[in-house]
Image 1 (tube, helix red, strand yellow):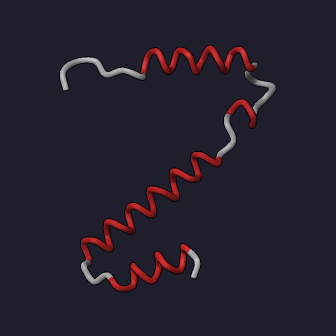
Image 2: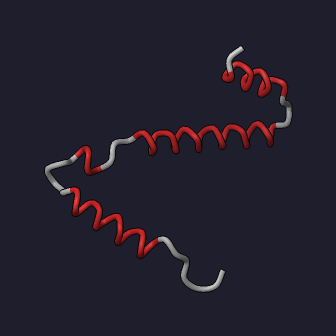
Image 3: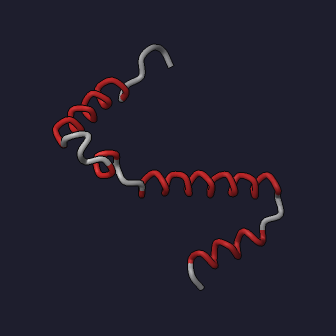
Length: 73
């Protein structure tokens, strides 16, 4: 039995609609995440529009500006 088949079999045994809904939302989230991870980057899709150096600089600025939380949490 494959992993997919085992997962489907286990899901078929569940009866709680709340749990089934959570699983459904989780699967949808994972599918979106997989799409994002597999999508080609802008620099690959549009190589004539941005150089590697410009892409690196842009990534550095984004990390510096958005990789921290300001204020109280």
